[in-house]
Image (cartoon, rainbow, N blue to C red; front, side):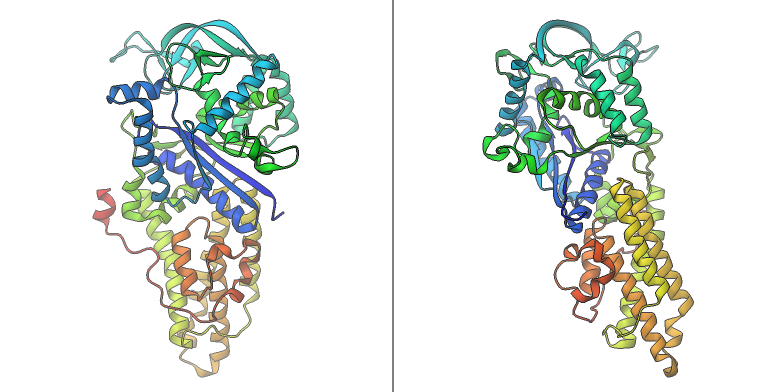
Length: 528
């Protein structure tokens, strides 16, 4: 119901390199969900940020001749925060793991687990992938036959050699929570989504959990273990806690007594993650929270990978594409629409410039954009820019109500692609309606004046509904359309539940509308 708390998070991203469209894809998905819930009237909080500790960051900074904090500061300000503007993200908070408030919260959390007997000291030896910041089992590695790393064991994800490490560590008794995790998965079937990922996680946990090494003593770039400062906290143990430190965990002024405070207002969250880091979020993270006596997340959704040339998006493999390469040509709205419409959310999806250009022209320019231009232009031409006072054709009115309800239901299931597809039923229906009703023919016959009023009123009614429903997906285009429809205030202030009742929030007359999705020359699209 409207007014409920909705806390949505992205992963916090490593600052070892600049973002590519895979990162932007996650950001946009979370942003669409957050904007939708805000527009429903829910108490919404959207969190993103950067992961700045660990061996990978330290090595990258050293290779570039600077300290790790200086490197992180540089990348955050020059690349990661600008990404949010590039794809039009309206996040509520940006967290960095180097924030003092976060570090204090991490130390408070791990100290509590230590005091409660969930952490012990031991020796660990194993294969360590610096790229993943994770120890690997033998079956997660590949023995290369040729190339630069012939004969070596490499990470299946990064295709780079792993290191054999042996060191004294502190361990989290994660194995104690195996059955409790399985009980969680059984009692909350939608805790892990999609279903294929849920089955994979259940299979993994059912095979048995080992205790988790949660400290490092071979380098010092990280949060200090509070009772032993010769160790820093394992970067994933540190990073996962951002989801609770961001909303006040570890801060007495923000967490408050039972039942009050920002932490209790916001938590638990819905986590959007790439499927390759789902185990951290669906196994380690809830086990940590169980140990601390805190509620587990509301949901963990592992979306698929973006594939380019059949391979996962990767800077190291030279398949990374900067978001600006797309937005500079097609705009941020087209970026947001394309990746959330063309790819089934939760599955892998292939990106190609040809598909993007084709969908831009067919669905945005010719479909939605041309519809908006035609309706506004006809009201201006035939009715002096004033909305006709006429009833709306029942068939279109009923469809508008259905797509509003269906899209909201899909968003509740995190099926963003379905939500957009539902809304597009109205785009297609209105285009067909105008073609069949031929208002330009009706305008030539004075006897058809009342019918023309009804056709124009029906088309405008549907167009306004589209402006409201598509606002979370394409905020720039819908803001222009809302202004052209005579909208008072901002379109995102119109409640989604009332998307079919928007006309009361307008002046009653239309204004000129520039093309929402201008024509892009083939050579310009190809040059990207």
